[in-house]
Image (cartoon, rainbow, N blue to C red; front, side, top):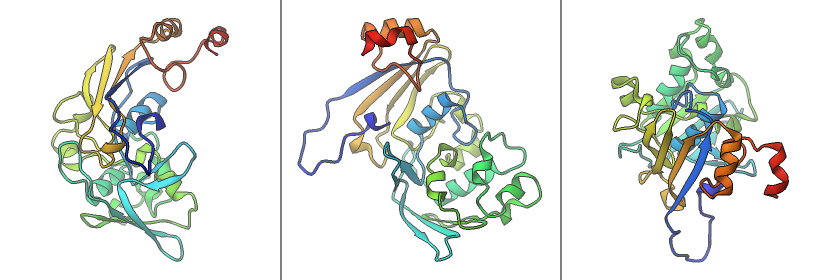
Length: 265
């Protein structure tokens, strides 16, 4: 997703010109709730619409995102995340409770999460998902509005890499409680935390994302809008690319026809 952000420059540069990116995807995402997804198309939207404690760049480096600082205990089993001053797309603060509730929801035995197993390094997480342990015994605890404490079963060297995956991105706990179908449509109930917001969703037709002014790195987001059209035909997408109607061809959007590769290089 590096094409979404401007680079870090030491010199002062004028703000980037407003840009719109046009893409094709084969179908609607299965879900826009990052706790539930696992397929490629859904994950693409989760990375665009939501944010987590950390993010992974194109060089596989992990850096804090919604977490401002991270403390790790000497035995490497307790991680304390201090959240930065960040906001949901409706302007309300993102809290440690949002993380605690989102992660514990995933671990409820009846919650339909494809990737719940990714949380199993957390103390009693697997037991909770299996219905053996209670959610109160899980090592996920908000110490206050800005501090989240995670206790692991054992030292897990890749834990920070793991939580960069979108299943660990929280949802707004208040809207999830009051409007549990919030992820089904665009509108005021679709509250997110990432670089973009859901501006429009016409099923089997088009999804339009707009830059999120409340995103904590909004000044570094180059694009003002992304339009993703539903086009399942690889040949049609190739023709649209050649006409300049879409800007990117290939994974994770639409595969490139093998026979077309010579004319594209």
